[in-house]
Image (cartoon, rainbow, N blue to C red):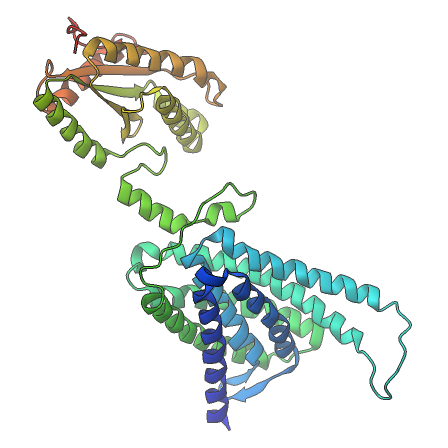
Length: 424
């Protein structure tokens, strides 16, 4: 009998996952509505089985509703997040939660009816539905917490298990399902009087379910979804999903396109590539190419006086101010710490000095709105070919002039002692 129960549980898991995977796979043709509706319909059965339907296994008593359906739903939600984003995954979670609230509200109203017994021996047991409703609300609240925690933990494991998705999913889901088992059993024991033996048996079963579903989701993503990346937009949301939306793929994308994750400016690695190419083009065409090295004055005071979080805000705001005042062809890089570099291709030295001076004034004028108060910058400017024919020559020249600006009192721009002719 025990072996038969194991076989039936595995059969249920395979049927459940196979149908949901087929509906998910068909989303590009029919939309996600079929998938989300099927996910929601199963919620009532899941809660019903978790309340009253138990079977015996060697390690304890379990409910297929909690083991097969809830555990599967959690991993399927993670699969939805991996292939779509948090804006999409929040839809079934919110739908389930508000739908269950509506069930409880309607049952509370329905209980006030004077019910007729039309068929002898057949009477509506609204008290049971009411009890079920509260369990569904509690279960969905846990599902909401579990889903967010699972996604966050899954991402946290990314740096060490990015190439081991099945192990990564199993560890994340095992931890979260352990938390869920404690939370749901507490309510189940209070509402329906479930014995404590269900607690341990259910936990062991959920660990097994986490392993089975992690393998199924991993195989599905590898063989059925390989090469089908979603087209998603990360809009501004007003809740916790704003933090989750596309985070892992966004960080991967930032790495691929060489952006600094804090400021959105190009990073130092990309500076080396783009800078060399700019200088080489200047050498071949005879056009000027300028480099502006920008450093925030007394930035340590911001971090020490207002904290590093405010320092990060200052860096982001500064990058935004700079980016808005550059030409379309100019490129902004975060070189490191509080230093930024602007590559201005085709810009002669005198014009580059003018650009640097405009940037300096704008920052001094507009930074007063920051919590840390007004900030200033010092800027060193160098231009090819006058300052050299290689990127390193330009950077050394600009860096030397930046320190001259610092030594001269900061909040100023310094370029060549005798600016070159501005003609192209």
